[in-house]
Length: 363
Ligand code: IPM
Ligand code: MG
Image 1 (tube, rainbow, N blue to C red):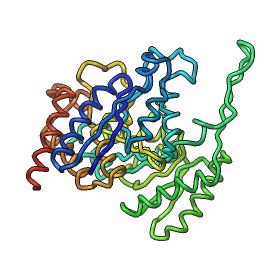
Image 2: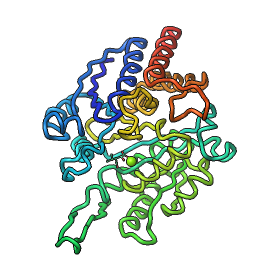
Image 3: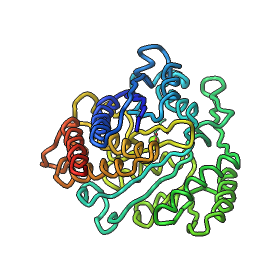
Image 4: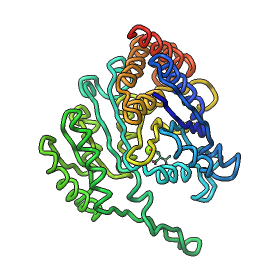
């Protein structure tokens, strides 16, 4: 199969982790007899510095003419004072919009090898395997009007949370559909005791849920879901929620399973999917070779599965990750005090090697 991928390394640790993810992708392509056509383009602060735009047209065009986008991370303190439209984050949000990527999948799995990383007791976190399905193109992130206005000292800021029925319907269908391939349970998270958007959300999700009688649907308020994720994370299967709640809860779940550095994501539903680690640009540890590449590598697994329908290849990458963790390889974020750490590069090469060997063995 021909895989046409655009890589957008971006800022901070983005370039380091996507480099390792691409190595693993190349090992998959070699090992399983596929072909890779790779483009690399600018996004975020890197593009802003190079050409004054966090999402240049050439980047959009390259993404639209490929089959999948691998993204590193965007943002950094150097850009914090920029006007909103010129911030690196605006580039990412526009990219999601341009590609129509409305469904953000964020799996969080507890790996027994990493029991020491979770702040929770093992009997609490054991068995945790959550798929957050986050609506990605609506709500507060994109709602109009939005502004900061008025005289200094008396300014007013405004954001709008807005959801239409079709937007809720399509993300709910994705959530229920994915639940069918898992443990068939959806918890829809909202704040319908306070917000109109959430009332509509609950109504529409319930209606869509009736088309999936084999999937068990329940509802939770976001505050109580935030607590339940810590008290009983293994009780969740698919967690379906709107944009802002999903942003917050997915970081929380990263903490629950032991490190945000492990979390991968797929943003799908539109013309081309975006696959990116959840962790962000982590400027404080950039360029030191200590970043955890597993989020990016697991994003390649999601790309193989959701972008190309190559589940055998995806499983092989995931098995590679489990194998290096079992072998005790730890980047700094995963290491316990006194434990030996490995570099970003060492972690990536080991997984690429695993994939190569597994593919050769499978032939
Ligand atoms: C994420 C990030 C982004 C978001 C930022 C960088 C715009 O936090 O993907 O979770 O808020 O969606
Ligand atoms: Mg976030």
